[in-house]
Length: 308
Figure 1 (cartoon, helix red, strand yellow):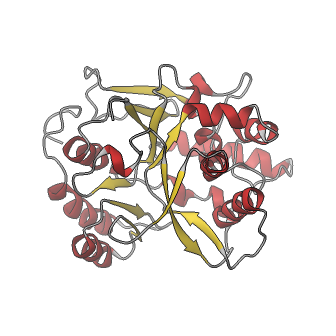
Figure 2: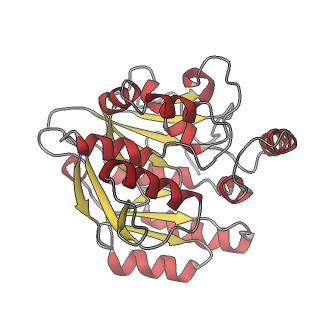
């Protein structure tokens, strides 16, 4: 597997008051103009953070040293703990990849639909949020076949109860032409592999207008193209491989169950795990999770500043 694999993070400092005020102003303006977006998908819960990316980067350094380059997509913000003298990590401001005329993007779907435009991004890349972590040594063949085909891990979905599950169901239904809400599959909420060429194929396909519209979407709505669609479209063309996920491979849990989170990660020992932050996350809870994360990740990451 001699092909290069890059890693792309989406990151935002949700504790930055300037950013929060700018985001809320944008939401208020769209609300006053009655422009479609979902309250649930644009809640402050989505920007809660306690420097998770610091621990995620440590885990990548320890368990995925074969990553070629790391790109962090930001919104006019700079993580204070990253050593930018490192040649392995780069910041990409959203404005560098956003469509012409688009100045503000607060929808993760929109940003994810644009990452393939990052200059010099390798054909093979992995997309990650800042709350995804590597739990043990993991090799390229977890994400790609020897031929370089992406491997997408799926889990059974049983209900459509929010914006995210609706987008997943829409993608699944369009590709497989099945419209049964109790018999569709969703990807495991964690790091996922992609090909730049697959994004370009979708852009040139009958779904190109939807992909372009998603890239213009300032706030999440029910009509965006979820990144899951890219993988399913790739599968329909014989590229991406689909596999069933297990708790031994990927674990997604909620931060408000601190003890359950730590227990599950230690008991199942999955390759990857995700920590979903609740809307109201106390300082005490943050301290507990930092205490849990710090010993499990590499203490002296080469790409982070010392004494963090």
